[in-house]
Length: 266
Image 1 (cartoon, rainbow, N blue to C red):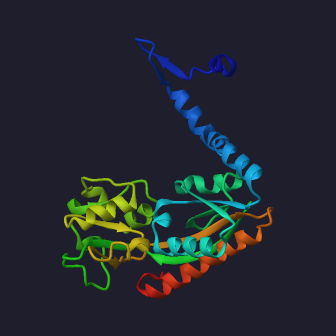
Image 2 (cartoon, rainbow, N blue to C red):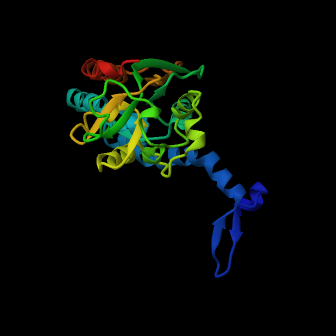
Image 3 (cartoon, rainbow, N blue to C red):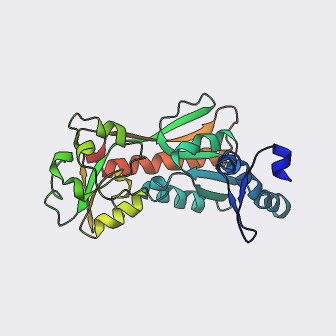
């Protein structure tokens, strides 16, 4: 019925009454995925209206932020100080954070920035340099800085889709093009877990350095790769007092984290 209404073939029909999404069907789902997410939240929103007067805040962040010490500290402080506010923390990829906030499917977005979207207000949190993560037993573990030339391409974990790749790859050495590594890892936490086993290294955000401090050393990377993080909010939607308090906690925790890790300041 939906295919007839849209005039688009959404599924391929196989034997035994099996259906698999067509190429157009996959593209259609990608376009409406955010809408579906909003529908899934209707029950949560309705329950909040019918059962209590508590304010509810949705914050969407990328995995490196969600697993960072400064973010966890900010959430803990906020929930302690605002027990009557319900906070929903959800993850998303960087390329979708802005559209999630603009589409009002999240009240606050936290991720790498800056944002150039005209509808968003960007509150800076951290200005960092990328790090080379190595096992604590690695010869580079106590170095003041490290570069691609210091490691073997066969040992490097690298996600080809990560936003830090282009400036790193354009260092003029041709290193990546000539000797690509054998393992591509999308999630920073997964990469850190692999590094902690003692057989890999990774170029990464240093946000998880305290979490993996006993098994992984984070060495400032050179040439520097700037990594800016911030909070995104709608410009035309005045934030509530609770939202202002949450952003203030994020800024405070980010400043405290930066003070402990000045070696990563860009």
